[in-house]
Image (tube, rainbow, N blue to C red; front, side):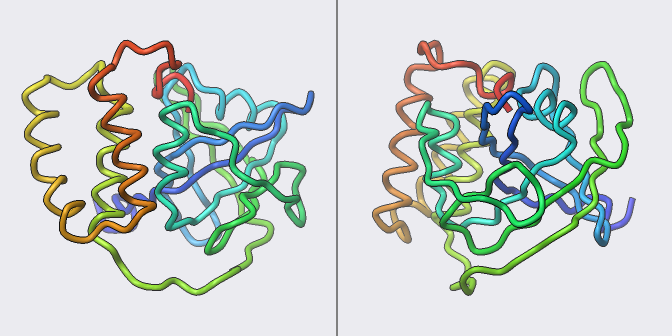
Length: 198
């Protein structure tokens, strides 16, 4: 397996069902040139919306509150119209790509949605890497798998990730970390399962 087959980018995917419902979800995508592969686990709102509408928007953001918010019931982030597809994009992003669905490689567990980028734009410059942002994204992935990972692994991972947060976080990263830690402490909260909501 080469690097282009293993590279995964963590993004926010926005979709709109033909009936009008909008959904935001943190997802890992794979890029092959102008082709983007989205592979949500079933059941998935993103899967349902994308298949029904034939389009989606990939949002590239360094505001990790959006990742944490989607997993903790905080989904009311400002949106704006996309240029070429009916799904909206996040209003505050570094960049975004608008996708049209080309085909589906079906699978009972995790179908692959093969999409083509039809429009892309950059909205503000990337300001550099931050360890706390990366730690929050890793914690968000752990939170999405709380029902599948052993408690000792989760505790060990959090212990390591907390170091970066304590050393390098700003207010946004601290807020996102705290939202996710509330979810870790109460994994059986009334919030919908993160894995089923993507």
